[in-house]
Amino acid sequence: MSNTGFHSTSAGDVAYFDRAARFYDIFSPTSDADILAEGLAQADRPIERVVDVAGGTGRAAKAIDAEERIVLDASKKMLAQARGRGLARVRGDASRLPLDSESTDAVVISDALHHVGDAEESLAEVVRVLKPGGVLVVREFNPATIRGKLLVRGEHAIGMNSVFFTPEELARMLADAGLVPRVRNRGFDYTVAGVKRTSGTT
Image (cartoon, rainbow, N blue to C red; front, side, top):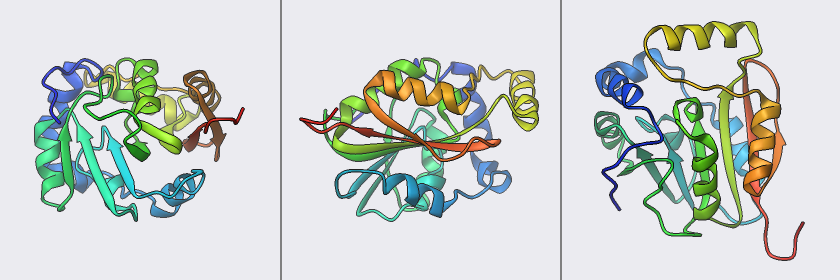
């Protein structure tokens, strides 16, 4: 499962994470295992296989209790750090996931969707690889808050092409992609879980 063309995450963002990979976990907060577990619990099927899309060093994957955890990222050096955590790794593009259709029970995108150049295309890919009843859990930052506005300015100042979404915008995007969205909160950091409909449900 390999993919050498990376379009959904800007080249500048990938280059930044390649440079920062060795120190990324030192300056980044740990993933909230309880919040991720709450999101995964929204699934309408057992969670055995989870893919951490744009998962970097595997912070979110490491916090998840699942039989199989896969970190998928465009940055080779971030994946090298995930390897040190003993996690399965796939190098790939979020807009063209190198995964079979309906091959995973859950997808997590933690603090990373804003780095994906075409979020709608990436969400469509997530829906493709999710099994019916599977769930997507997205952890993001709200650009409508004061801290969110500062984050947007900061990332743009260092050359990132980040595009942030409010909880309402993201919930609408998940619904448009064919998921049933549920918003956990609407603060600076928030979570939206989207469940893929099973046949016969509306």
